[in-house]
Image (cartoon, rainbow, N blue to C red):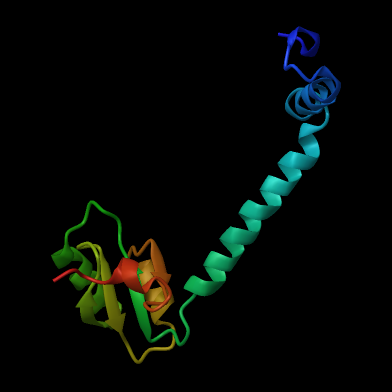
Length: 129
């Protein structure tokens, strides 16, 4: 369908609108739109990463892969030198504590996918009782 085939009843306004939309969707006009969307996504991911980074490195939420059970996760936490404070929303999310300053790195070495601030995603990391 071409813009000239549109009968919007107000062709004086409809024609430029149709051409503008076609330029954004088909022509080179999509590049600024794509750049803006990309900047929004990168900004949101950066803010989430900053918010999620552990504050002190001693109290963290460890997120392990879904194919391990809570027993395996607790073993891995103990091997990293930590203790479980409470369970998270799933069996593979645990809030843990250690006095070691390099505890997040030890957890990652034990297979934790993510080590985040347990307060950052408060509602997501809480275990429903």
